[in-house]
Length: 108
Length: 117
Image 1 (cartoon, chains in turn cyan, blue):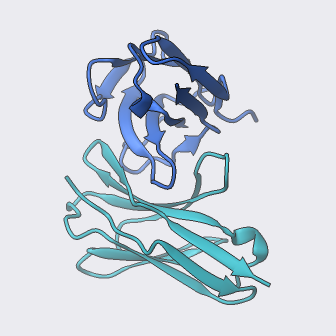
Image 2 (cartoon, chains in turn cyan, blue):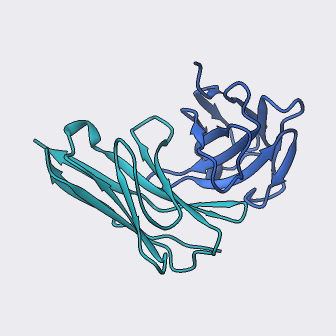
């Protein structure tokens, strides 16, 4: 079964770019990588999804190297409201493996 | 529109009791997922429905856990003979039709916090 690892926590300041990496050494050929944001007492909220190379939407970018053994979520110009826990999700067959989460604290 | 709703929001029960947790997915969503989230950890997959049938229940920890979705909409997660280790937040998510489970965006509810005393 695939396993994912993430840094436990990160600090940043308002206006900075934040990059959070998820490692997934055993990713399978057809797996997708999805990132979610979670605030206290709420369910996770979809941010971005990708398979390879780079994906960008209105809130984030996702970078996946050629070997796909890791992925990096990039949040441009974070604000205080981006303080949350960020999870990568590896879709492994019909199983779904979440990473342990990275707690991002954005400071003024 | 309305999102995924879960009831109750909180449930406190005693060890050995039976509990039911309900999930109302987004209208029209065919896929439904259950996860369990312990404090400080990522969600742990339990079971995935496509329509009325359980497409994958490999995440259910043991036979005390069971989930149904009889009409392809509302789902109920049932836990028999609850144990203190079952205490967690139980999350439900749903996805729209048309995609593969591995690529569908999952829309999560707020969860049910279960406490077993």
